[in-house]
Image 1 (tube, one colour):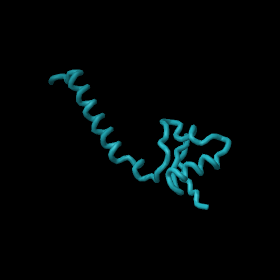
Image 2: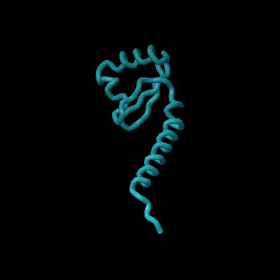
Image 3: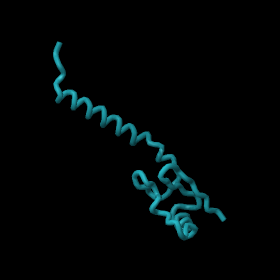
Image 4: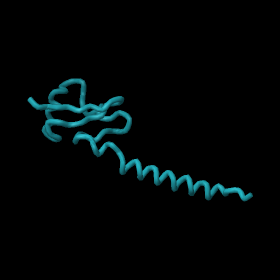
Length: 84
């Protein structure tokens, strides 16, 4: 019985990792969300909407992305409909 060298194991691992990441990118559900500001990793769009004057920020986002847009929070995904 022959042992698998660490180099071969590393190459196999990296190959499977690349295949997995490519699969995740092309099958990501992000493409199915409505338009909206690009979220930051982990915190989402938390910095895009300040505690004060949220109505002005949402109005500006509606002008930029349309009446219906999507934003990410730390623990949730939110859609906003700004039709008046």
